[in-house]
Image 1 (tube, helix red, strand yellow):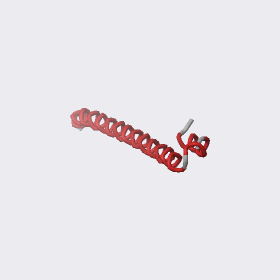
Image 2: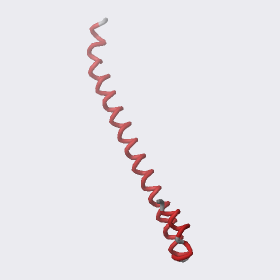
Image 3: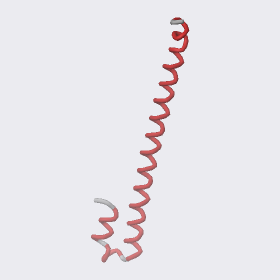
Length: 67
């Protein structure tokens, strides 16, 4: 169950401040998760670019043999 859903379900019992805190905590958790996903995607892209560059660099001497 998500934090905003808990805030809605238990909002009357918790009070407004606690309900707002739960919603804010849920938003912070979502932002943190999105940040982790973006960082992972950037790391994967950087790794792929590095491997591509290594392959192209290794093929560079072979280009001169065809001339």
